[in-house]
Image (cartoon, rainbow, N blue to C red; front, side, top):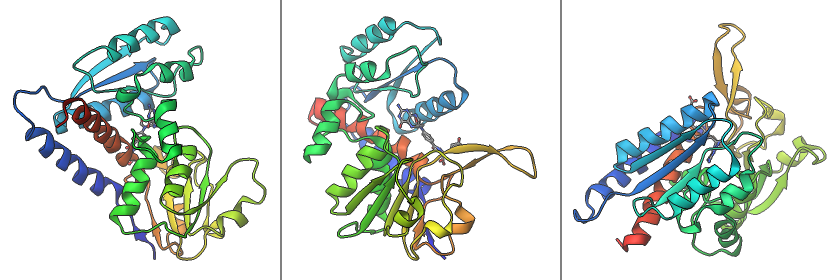
Amino acid sequence: MAQRLDGKALAQKIQAQLATDISQRDPNLRPPGLAVVMVGDNPASAAYVRNKERACDRIGITSFGSHLPADTAQETVAELIDQLNNDERVDGILIQLPLPSHLDSVALLNRIAPDKDADGLHPENMGRLMRGEAGLRSCTPAGVMAVLKEYNIDATGQKAVVLGRSILVGKPMALMLLAANATVTMAHSRTEDLPALCRQADILVAAVGRPNMINSDWIKPGATVIDVGINRIEDETSGKARLVGDIDFASVEPIAGAITPVPGGIGPMTVTMLMHNTVLSYRKRFNG
Ligand SMILES: Nc1nc2c(c(=O)[nH]1)N[C@@H](CN(C=O)c1ccc(C(=O)N[C@@H](CCC(=O)O)C(=O)O)cc1)CN2
């Protein structure tokens, strides 16, 4: 039976450490600040934003929420980003994704000042990751790396397969595993014979957004299985909404070496790495 990698517990531990660090700052300095920009009223996004604002409260980060109507124009969001870039109280800025389809997300993400890019999605920070330079790292893959480290799972020389090629997860995930000396393969919907490829993986990261897609036939016995998928489905017996990952947990847990659950795995680490990035930007600003 696989070891469960408890992202929720690790998230609490790191957040407690961040809270201590912030409480011990020079009392003459303002606390760190995170600006959260949300456009529209997607219920899942609203819940994630609430989680982020609550995490800020717990840790001692001031959150500045801008919740704009769904029909907000590109120029209005761009002007807000410019204001936040120049706001001395703000160390981190995030734009909650996805944005309504009339908005150009890439242009808006690129407008965030790289040193306030709490989500690590700006080309400068992505470029730094690619070149192995210090910078703000995207939160979900950074959360995966923190879980591997916590459980002493060394990626060196391991075959890693990353399923999914998004800017948010797949691409930065592959680069971070590569930096940790894994031999990395990126796979996606056009990859031939995905199950056979995944069966070669010592470390499998699934970020495809398809509920329970991966079962035990895809898994090398003893592999480390990281589930980044967060899918809401209707429970067949109760009829209630339920959260599942991309991995069919019940099928895979008996043969994997280690596995992250959903919920309670990588999701809470995403929020925690956002807090971590905000504190990192703050420290850089104040040299503290
Ligand atoms: N700007 C961003 N937008 C989005 C990101 C992101 O990293 N930056 N990621 C996702 C959503 N997301 C954060 O925004 C996110 C998703 C899930 C969780 C989480 O903690 N999930 C819990 C379960 C929560 C629940 O019950 O619904 C878990 O897995 O245990 C945190 C953050 C898309 N947009």
